[in-house]
Image (cartoon, rainbow, N blue to C red):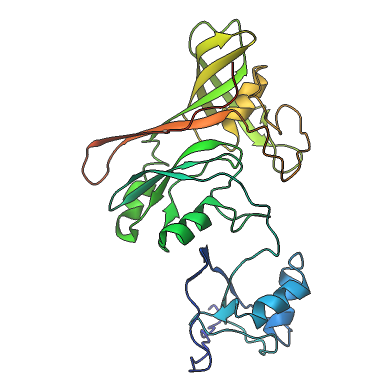
Length: 313
């Protein structure tokens, strides 16, 4: 039989008020303390997450950014106790501000539709916490229960759909794995003279090098994109891209593989270094529209981005 491990809670006291579920737009991360030899919770966190650094963990704990599951702050000297569930809040000492604003396209009782600018990630990751769409919206709109129903790349601009209501969230989330949402994108890329009719690109996409890049590989296709040329001027064209599947960087990989990499792509076909504060060359890829039958009412819903690609043809 598996070993019984009782859940340990720290009692709340008037001197240790409960921490909120969201701090300055940032939701808590969670970890449960396993069997181990650590004398303090601080020692465990430093060993478990060495990339964060001991100084950062010490500052977080002294500022009340690490707490137990009841929301009671955990200090650097708190003894280690197996089974204790921790909540901690990520923050960065310094973030490069992204000088572009998101725009609300639609809001009702259940959904929020937002136009995301280039260079802003949808959710906190890596060197972006406050400079992420989700945290900005939680902070600006005061909606702690906001959850993105899908994601687009940091480099890509355009529509992102959010759920406002936990009670109806699952109904909308299921639209995406069921491929019940028609997503269309616009892109500017080199003209493909041979493309006289819509082209369907099917291939197998897998991990590349370095780890954040993707590449086409041999094997059963796991990705599909419909590619249509809307207009051509000089050596460039504007394309409508309709992904059937949703692989990471799928549109960028497919266009590069066809010999028409999307303008200003810093990753495909070749990786190039761009300064963190260089916003002068946005990727010319826009999440243009979202269409689906509403799972609650059954009515068709269509949302269109109000953004335009900036690069002239």
